[in-house]
Image (cartoon, rainbow, N blue to C red; front, side, top):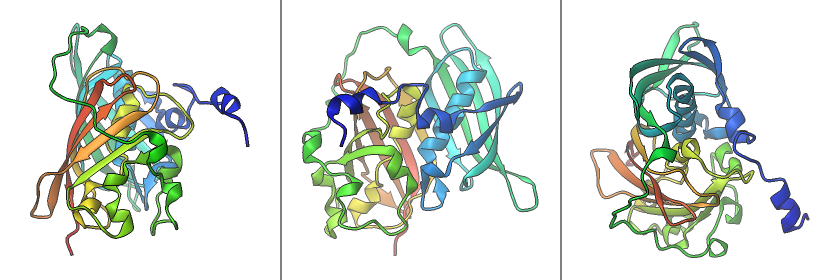
Amino acid sequence: MPDAASVQAVRATIGDSEFDRDTAVTLREPGVYDIDLSAGWTIVSAVNGGYLLAVLGRALADALPHPDPFTISAHYLTASQPGPAVVRTEVARTGRTLSTGQASLFQYDDEGREVERIRVLASYGDLDTLPDDVRTTAKPPAMPPMDQCFGPEDAPAPAPDSSAIVDRLMLRLDPATLGWALGAPSGKGEMRSWFGLADGRDPDSLSLLLAVDALPPTAFELGLSGWVPTVELTVHVRSRPAPGPLRVSITTRNLAGGFLEEDAEVWDSADRLVAQSRQLARARIS
């Protein structure tokens, strides 16, 4: 087994990571990009919504004059599948500090017709130009150290319908939010985890779009099971994250009519709140 120094030496860097390769888009013509959605970011057979948001986020970063998503809202129209896809972008406005655009991802049905999978509207800026002034009542989530938390590899057996995405992530879940895995969900609708990419790549503004949608759903701790598909997801990126693992805290306060909300906070290694999100998702109630 390699020692810690050699593991550190082979850590992926931003721009040279599986995440970067699998979210890379190829410019076909102005505003139009091609991509082959990787099967490595699937949950059962559907492509993860955070990965898809990062794909569209990367296309918009190329189409707009500013590099970082400040706010991005996505509506998930149909489930995306691994394979070829087309992203079409449109610039709505460009300004000195913010630019706004929209993007849609399309795939093809069995008859070769385009089907829209996801549509986003986003405003971009440059996180490095923001002032340092912070006035907040928010506090980092209280979590055990990483070595006292648990990952998918600690499960006694692979979960049914296991997901390829877990092999690409470093997840260390807070034991207090793992009752569902032991058949005793807490009923609190909370999920907390240390988060990173499995190849060691440090976080950036685009990987934050993945982080907010990569944990097990809070519905599990409410005693529900099965897929919890996202209907709408809005992410606010507040700061460029410091190197090192992130802490992600997600809560659900209201499940009604078969829908629930998930509010996420993402904290970096410098104890800064670097991203926030809210999504509406369907929950299967049996």
